[in-house]
Image 1: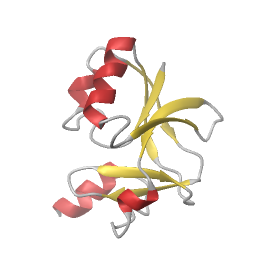
Image 2: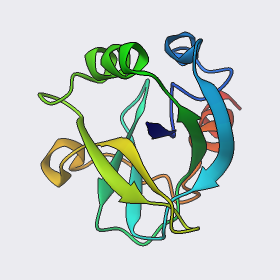
Image 3: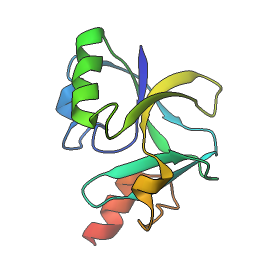
Image 4: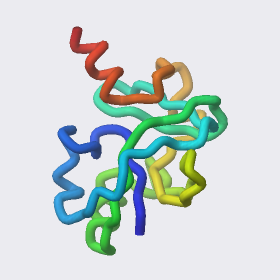
Length: 121
């Protein structure tokens, strides 16, 4: 199964170790139909925005997918959902609801790494 990651699971980020056995397929962007919000230590992705969100796609096996689901609190916190990338590929990713991100700052760039660098400066 292919999974799109956009925050702390990216290469070099704190939770990337969960993807240790996974194969990086490509760097990718979502269709411009999402919004990325800053939740402090991690971002939240929601449908219904106008931004393309940058991330990476990994090919994961069943044990890795189960570990991702545990980390993301699926389905109680994040919900693993199928989305389309800007190239039309269908992948799984983890989404939040609009209610969960209400009032949180929008990451206009759609790029979690850029946002972290801005916050560190």
